[in-house]
Length: 219
Length: 334
Ligand code: HEM
Image 1 (cartoon, rainbow over the protein chains, first blue to last red):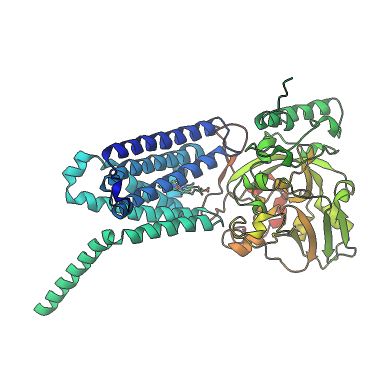
Image 2: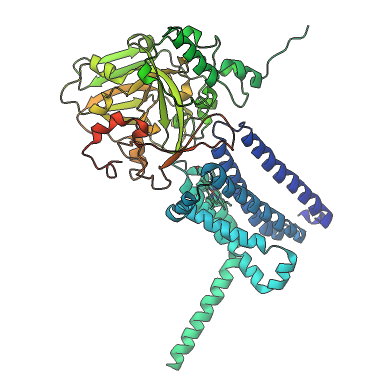
């Protein structure tokens, strides 16, 4: 198919430059609008929606990279995963900070009770914790040091994205169609990557049944 | 010759009354002993604003109203800017996003209109478009509007008492509830045509009050705000305003008011009875299952850094409503 075009490091360099420009300028511009009261009547809600959807879009994009690289046989694309994932984290941090600073206006007790009492906030919080761990372990030296556990740790991105899909569905009053479309897109991506997270589960399951069988034999 | 066409951003400046100007003019008129001199209150070409700078010809035209300004309905609360009141709306008939109603409703037809009052009454009534403004004395009432989503506004409504309207139809003693219905017109209301746009709720939108609630002097049928007739996104030409209840009770673009002896099932109750009750009184002690109702963000002018989180008051700060619920468990009847 597109075999004649080889995506090289130079190409991905420019893709990354574009990514930085777009993701950062969009973030800065939207926050500027919100600070100066030009983002609709309720800039707080507007910024929460912008950062939340932005984070989810980037998260889904980061999950799309590997299947795409495989399908197009362009291994070089995989280097885009880390910056995209990190931007998803940046947007998620902005989302959370905006909630704390502008929605709750630093009422810490309210933050705590909302995280504990509201399921949609709880799952959002857990997703954010997972993304934080992934971001903190995303550098090359740490990846090297972690060896095989790195991949296992980073497979938690699937759990995080499922929690975000749930967070989105639970956050709306009745307008379910869009969050459901997002959830379906996520499921499609998960199906594309099924071997990734099914294998560890299967191997564990196999191990367990084997040991059970051997136990039975012993008995 | 240079002909300069104003940009949408310039247009909006002059067409919308600034809240401080509005409040000052109000103050000035009062001190001069003018009450009801509404013509002085508004700029001549008052129109709705289109935030997105869309087709300016398609902005709904509102007209100045004449009304009195009873002192009891004055308020010390800072008014929410008109621009925000007319651009941040929950009116799923025109789309479920907050800015959809402004964007999608500007060619909405309000004249001719027909509002019918029937059911358990001696004398059914029908008000046409002109009757809405002429049948009753119009008053300006500044009310807090508390949305169930935990934001609030302060709105200078213009309208007449719902009780006066119901009395005119001579209610029978068997009438226990009042049912309200929004216009059903999918050709004009894209949300009624398409589930995606309409947020998945059943149309026509139905709301209800107990008869004593409907007869309460605070319950208002509003035909205007900020000195002018209502724009469509705020429920033109006539909508209910029940200030001690969450905003979704204050049904918009009403075409029918029916008195009945049975408690109606309201639209949001039908959709999620565990989250939206029939009474829906503003109550900081009873949380929505998914968020707190103890506090709210007051929408005023200002960007992200405005410190606008305030404590929510019982009955939205209208204690005169409390006696109607004296022996009810408000946790059960939320
Ligand atoms: C402690 C962590 C989090 C908190 C407190 C939080 C809070 C919120 C709040 C308050 C809303 C808006 C609900 C409304 O419409 O009023 C929301 C919506 C949303 N959040 Fe979060 N969130 C968190 C984590 C996340 C994360 C990690 C992501 C994605 C990576 C995310 C994605 C979204 C999305 C997509 C929406 C829907 C936006 C929309 O309706 O347009 N959230 N969240």
